[in-house]
Image (tube, rainbow, N blue to C red; front, side, top):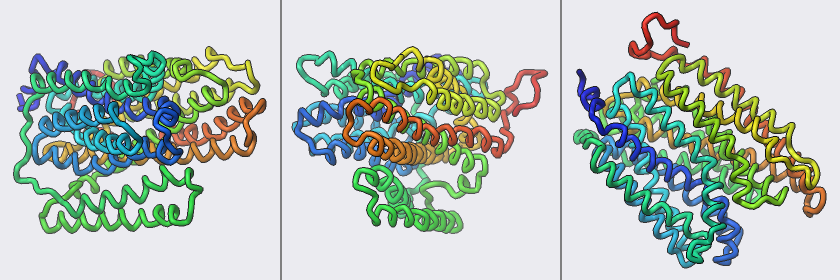
Length: 490
């Protein structure tokens, strides 16, 4: 039995996984839960529109920029140590957000949250292979898929409920303060059940690589997040154009470091791994289709049709139900047929988005929340089917000391995908609304429906592209986990 298999035999491995997933869920849900509270924050703190935008942007930028170095630091100093440090920093940031006296303090606290989230998230995926044997990893990754999928839509429901309850007169602040007991429980469980997993002391840190990666990601993320809000000035386009040479410079630097045998932020071997690189690109596609959708869908329900934040969140519940159902099935399938499952899941997502266009309301009073159940359920089933095997494929051929770097890079590009999707879908949506209903009024429901229909073409086509392109991934090596007599794996 290998060392990993002996570790996986530990009776506490599922409790350890629960601690990892609770922390990951706490981090991921924070992205969506804030959207519900933004109007309340604006009124409570007297914020400007730009400051409200930065409540979201400060977190996304910090999180994405810190993921790559955080993954490498986990390789160097130990993944449990980095995970615990990340949960502590994130919990502290949540406390600072909940106590923030003004907008600048809140934005600064969101930066602290972003640092903590970036510290803990790469370690989550990197620790799973050390906890579980090859035969159990499919179930573990499926559960991670549940946490990832549910976080995207649970935020509006939980945020709406907490704001509506106005606990102790705290208004929007409980959406952050609720993270404190959750973070403490995750820390205690990880201390008890997650193995120490010491780092590789001989690994060095590539500070120049960190700087180049931060520059390249900033050149992409900043204009994508801010461009629409400030009218896409020329310098935003210049930043996007400069991102390509910045990534080329980073690629050259990593190759140079590898040739000289020096420290690399992302091991150059990962860049020569076709499964990892292609899978990372497909992950960008998958994650570009979801955050933007839920952002504009919430606006259609609330601004366009007058639903409360809680009603809006509850309307999306068929989606997480679909994610949970499909992820439970994915756990039973383990590592079998990963490419086929990604393909079918992406097709389900695409069909769900297309079907959603047919049930959108045209006039006031026509909104039927029940009509959204079938398309959202189908889309949820699609995400739950696709996400686990996609992670398996991407990380399946990455092991040893590079696992943290691989997962950190993967999650950094998830954020690139999310920012891309929000920018594209936001541009399609808001430009259509302003064209059809510049002053709002009676025509608003139809205008918002037409705007959502326009935006949905983006993620419908992206998911369809994912279904086709997944077959370009190399046939995965399943390590003999298939059952005897099972057919060849797709």
